[in-house]
Length: 110
Length: 111
Image (cartoon, rainbow over all chains, first blue to last red; front, side, top):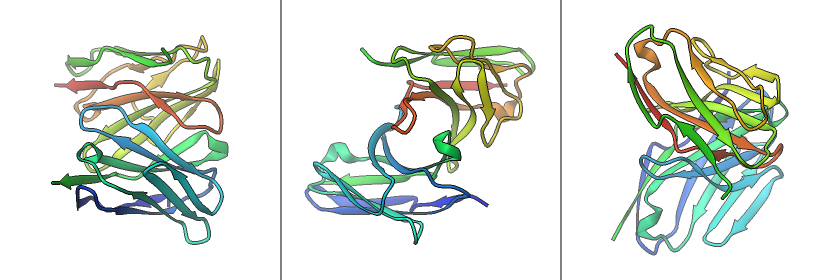
């Protein structure tokens, strides 16, 4: 079957670094996406990995290992506004199908 | 402003009363998709469309219909809504190979 696993909740301190892990088993792979979703709002794009390795965008980085079916999202210099859900998603079927994990709720405390 | 719009944003209806949720994008994207989001389950894909007149089922298509007569519009139709279709619905669009842009969501309650 197809499955994406990520932790349900995480808590971190303002200014710290947090790593959110995602493991996946899918029948195809056309890229892995991370989205941020604040409560009551739409998801917004954070990062995209299609090749193995690290992609860095400001305070956010994402890593992919296709052989291990593993990705992580790294958030540095945490701010209170980073409190949100982080969704791991895998594109397959030529990029037309997308499977989402249930999301990781991140709480940033002062 | 580049955006995806959905209407209505909130809807309370009764079992069996047909309804349509509209979705429109102004980015000239070929690809559009519908998702439902339920607590603990995350976003699940209902239907997607690769282009005008081309649609296909996602993971949870039962009880839903879609149409894509124009590039910018992708309505979601519930012919006979049931309480298990109570959910938060998101429409999204993208260029092929790129990230998805999501609409603001439609919160549907079926009693």
